[in-house]
Structures are given as C-alpha cells and as structure tokens.
Image (cartoon, rainbow, N blue to C red; front, top):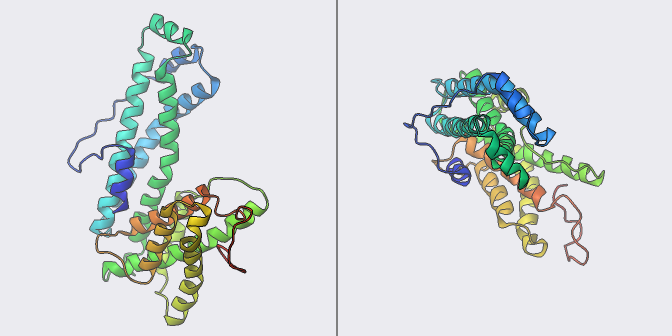
Length: 306
C-alpha cells in the first residue's frame, strides 16, 4: 500500500523480476585520486566512508532479502520488504555508477568544472550517499519485522490478520509515547528529527515484544484508543487553524482504524509501521510539538498528547 507510494516518490520502482546488477567499486586505492581533488573535505569523507563500508551494505541487503523470503513471513509482508530491498539495490547501483564515473573522469575536464564552482559528480555522489544513509532506517524496519516474525512464528501461526492487529495496537501505543517524549524534548529546546526506528536491534526487540503480547481486551482497547483518539481529534480539528499538512491527520486516522481492527486486506504490517513513522515525522515537520502560534483560538485543556 504505502510502500508503492513511497517508491514512486523515490523514482520508478524496480519490478520483482528485474535483475539489478550493482557494479563493483574499484580498489580503495582509487580513492587517492578523489583525495587529491580540490573538493570539500566533508564530501571526501562521505565518499570514503561509503567506499569502505560498501561490502557491509551489500551484505545487509542480502540478509534482508533472505529474511523476507523465509516461509514464516506472510506474502504481503514479504512483497513489501522485498520492494525495500529492490529499491535499495537500485540506489546502490546509482551511487556506484556515479563514483566510477567520477574516478575515471578526465582531469582536464575536472579542472574546467572546478573553475565554475566544482563538478556535478562529486556533489551528486555525496547527496546520493546521504540519501541512502537516511533511507537505511526503512531497511532496518523491514529486516526487524521479518526477523521478529520468524522469532515468534509459533505464537503467530494463526490468521495473518492477528499478526497485523498486534503490530497496529503496538504502533498506536508507541506513537502516543513518542509524541509525549517529543513534547518534552521540544519544551527543553532539543531539536532533532524524530524516528520510530532507532536501529535494527532495538526495532527488532520492540517488534518481538509486540508480537509476543496478547491482543488488547475490551478495557485496554477502550483505555488506549480513547487516549489516542483525543490526539487524532485534536489534529483533525485544528489542522486548518495551524496550517498543518492534511496528511498528518490522515496517517494518525489510518493507524487508529487499524488498531480498532479495521485493517484493509492489502495492508501489511510494514505498511502499518510506515504509517506510524510518517505520522511522527509529519507532526514534527508541521511543528506540532511546539505551542500553537499567538492568537490561535483552541479549546481549553486541549493538547496533542496528555
């Protein structure tokens, strides 16, 4: 579901049958040519670190592919995780092609570009590498989900919908806690891009915990969703006044419906986790954790998270 949308934002999604060949990087000694060029040290460092860790990145993607294809992983989850894998391979291919072109470029041509503010290859390479670094949290999320499903296969051998409902219920609680945490951080003037994914191990531990739990009973459902619903109503009710992007409320509402048990048939557990991530990041981008602008008329005792 959302995975397809995200991939369309990044570019054309490789088809499942498309073979993606990542060209190998030259020996690290080739970096000496880049080191001797008159480009920013930060750019050189970015390229060097990528070069040194490329094999690890490729091995991590192979781990993701193998984990997604395990028999314990349901088809919807498998397909979405493999989509992340294919897009990541495509990204690595583009980075390597750019670096190879950069290394083998004509020195005279490079000097000409420098006279007019630097070449495009060194700029493109560092930007592509940084974008890939940011996107690795999606790989961590996908791999953590597959590994958590594998580890709890005996507990979740029944209908696939139960697995997704457990993830949705966990995501609602997790988002509510992260909203409260971000409000405290903001009050302390700590500014950092939020994410539901800290690292692979932490994410896997969270999801194993989620999948080992029982589904909420009636009392727990009423308690958790009642509190979370207030946040959703606040966002939907005041997004116009605060000029928030409508997608903030949409993602929080989707998460609420999934936790209530209304999960669309084409929605995977990865879709649900992605929706939580987007809700948190869009709330942050719309400055939702900060006090409302002056003269904004809001009902008394209303806030994003209690």
